Amino acid sequence: MVVFCFLVDQTRKMRRTKPVAGSCSRCGRGARVADMLTATRFCFIPFYWRSWKAIVCTFCGATLKTYR
Ligand SMILES: [Zn+2]
Image 1 (tube, rainbow, N blue to C red):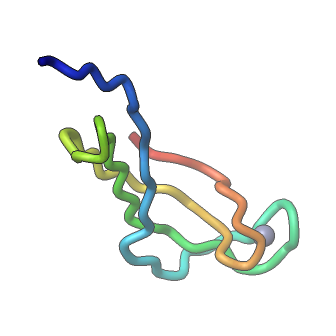
Image 2: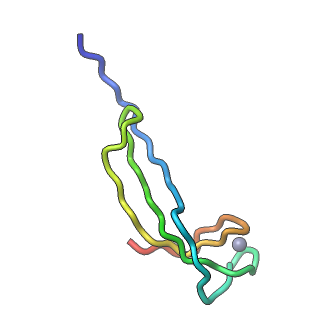
């Protein structure tokens, strides 16, 4: 018997951050450049990873800019 599973989700992880020049447009605190990792999962089994960089604010959680 074959059971089909159509549950696909993505988890986003922030691997490390370091300070960068500039400030958050929402709260005005310091912005940080972050190495991000997105894992796409199918039935809870990760099958695709993508790493990317983003300028984020760790105080309010805003994503200010992304690099793909
Ligand atoms: Zn902020």
